[in-house]
Amino acid sequence: MKQDYNVDAAGFYGVFGGAFVPEMLYPNVEELQNSYLTILQEKSFQKELQQLLEDYVGRPTPLYFAKRLSAHYGAKIYLKREDLCHTGAHKINNALGQILLAKKLNKTRIIAETGAGQHGVATATACALMGIECCIYMGAKDVERQAPNVARMKMLGATIIPVESGSKTLKDATNEAIRDWINNPVDTHYIIGSVVGPHPYPDMVARFQAIISKEIKNQLKGDPSHVIACIGGGSNAIGAFYHYLSNKAVQLVGVEAAGQGIHTAKTAATLTLGTQGIIHACMTTLLQDKDGQIIEPHSISAGLDYPGIGPQHAHLHQTKRVNYHSVTDQEALNAALFLSKNEGIIPALESAHALAYLNKMEIKPTDKIVINLSGRGDKDLETLTKNLL
Ligand SMILES: *Cc1c(COP(=O)(O)O)cnc(C)c1O
Image (cartoon, rainbow, N blue to C red; front, side, top):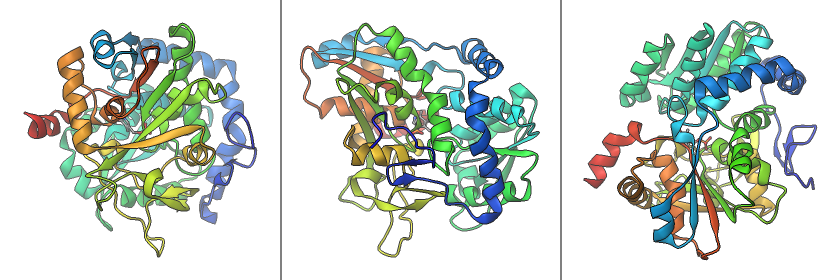
């Protein structure tokens, strides 16, 4: 087993990963597989990306020593402030990386799918910045539910395509985006928003998000005792863990959404409850019934409401390098209120899952805990106030 827990030459992490794509899609995926590492390592690519991360995104994001949180829990607690990134979350790190890659591949058109709209907004932002055509597939139900993000994407010049098939949500939008990519293999790049999908996406997105742990290493004196991050598809978590994976002195903790509880049907705790199978063209762990049908997940936070998980996390779970836990909707809501009132930072509901884990872990006074604050809570204000105030 590989010690650094990264992808092998065939695109696998142990038994997980791979590229189980229909034959029609194979040329698109193969082009990426053959080119991504070379392009990512080009000096001109790295230079342009670094510059954008600094001047446009606002990196490095601060590693903030949370004094009152630390006093409350009796340990040193630091927040990695991805909430301060342009557009309000870590997703822009990946969107910018992929759009520069698309330019190197002479692509003139970008497609993406989005559920809650966060990835759609990051993608539309990157496209506006580069002057590239942007097409966002979104379930018709989600278009209705996520009006503010739909408005943002329109302001940014993206075309929104409401998908009326199936349950009119994320998985239907994904199907339509894949169909589009099959029909436009030459000029179009498909930007996937997390460490999911066929190889090389999980590794490519991980490399773009790895900037998070690279910065933490520079910002923190010595090793943290723990790095804690929430998990939807798993990209902010992999980013926060990446440069610590081979350092066993650092405990890595991934926090899934338990929704209304892991003993209820309304949950998104994939690693706690899921089994091995294929979703979105990769072998991983997912919520499925006896017949292999995907079970609709539930979480109060739209970004964690995903029935699968990135294949690297499935592998890190199996090899026990990372410990995975789950936190309920209510626990996340309480943690969001606590951080708001005690540090003056309103977190995204996704990030609040990572914060809530502080109440469940055994904390020693010598602990140095880093929490990846993946995003800000502006988008969740309605949910937060409705449930808390
Ligand atoms: C999308 C999102 C997530 C979940 O995605 P990952 O790929 O698991 O990081 C977490 N936090 C925020 C703020 C998000 O927007």
